[in-house]
Length: 337
Image (cartoon, rainbow, N blue to C red; front, side, top):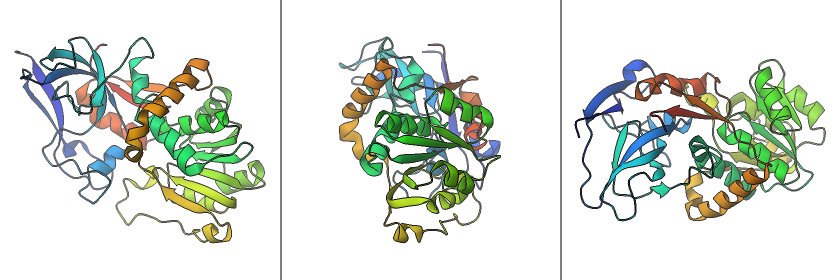
């Protein structure tokens, strides 16, 4: 093939918020698949807060992206060429394809999807890792019971919007914390949350005293920092905290701020447990079946925020997450579907 493959490669490990100089935009010839390989044309990429952690050299649940490597990213693509018996040209697939226009793969971790079942970006959100994270984090660690109060931070984001809706499906009263009046209206008016707190204009502790007078039974935390500290002061007896993420801390240049109100866990006999969705990989089909059923029934609504500009737009699109500019699942379109 004479076409070129644009890629974003990690050029430097960021200090604080990633800068343009932390990336290299390169172009290589599009490779030809050999026996047992397939070539995927990437259509959409998932933009996730976890990407910031993957850029660090520190020990984590997954190996870091090395300097000079294509930036890791989950994606949706279309098989452009195949010498693999399990994939045909034209198949739509999902997998970890990286921030590039074409990905050569041996098929490991690549799954065929049905574009008639849902829009392609939905497979990166509600029917992808975001939905799985919300499903297992809430149900396996949060263990919500009907009538209990569930609070979700970053509730207008990819995982938070799913976690809140799943809690509603299970009969809970749900309060979302989000940034901005428009996001809060979306949570209540479109996604069925019982209430929303705008952390830009409202005090979280004061609002929770009013909205959760008997305390918070489950807190699904995507933010960490001051938000986590505020919710810790309002725990019900036996509360469960799901530590899913801490986006407020990912670009910190000083030591990560831990919860100063952690003794509330003692007085409330509460638990705070971290979760990584990959631990539930053998149960993904279970979650996908439930999420698909709820979506088809109309009890689970999906929100996708699709950015354009292709591979070169990746660095700035990633920063939209940390600026709080996205509503729902942030996806970068790489090519026409």
